[in-house]
Length: 346
Image (tube, rainbow, N blue to C red):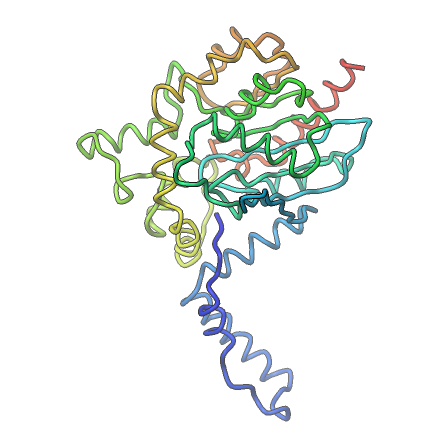
């Protein structure tokens, strides 16, 4: 979730008369701070959410960077640490409608010697929207990831690619299509066709059936329109229930809304039969060591078709939002596989 705050909004917050110097004592400053905070909380809650996201990313050790191609397409990414010729970096690919922020609690729990890069995929976070003439399915996203690595001068090293949900499918497909760039891959609850529908697909199917086979912004459960909708979605994708004030939920929704039309188009692509079968069709091409982290159906399909499946981790007490439910446990199993994969290749 992210948003570009308009200049007019910022001006409306700071365009207030200054107090006389003699009134700037600790008590008056405390009152002014409290009043300003309440004003932002009730009028512009998305600014508080955005501030929290930025602080969480910084706290994780990541720093935001960007690269731009000759046509003006910009990739924004979070990076922690520095690449080493002796060990692979970790490339983190987020899920549908998320961005680099989702990786903050996980990066914070990764060992300090792991160089981590969390990319905002096209149309997500602070990266540019895809041009209207560009396809938005897996194929185009994979090409954009490859382009990003070239622009960031990272294409000459190998990555341990880690992805969740949509990013889980992309991580496997990237390993299949660009084996020279991947040392190992961790697919977490990847978007794919499974014997039993996962939480997200089941939620989408139910909504489509209830709305006469059509899906609109107003009826899509994965694109909440208000704080209550977001609370309902979180109750589905999270194992642990967390109390979040209604204003903060609304602020989070407001951050997403500017891209909801793109998200809806992308969602239609992701739940299509072609996209759901894409990963399974290319699993046999993955030549590097593979780790699978899941909480739902699909393990047997992956066990049967992945050539070098080294590790399967099933996290207890965890929903689809693995970054919220079990960030520390997830970071631990990824770090263990990262180390094991290197040991086996040396």
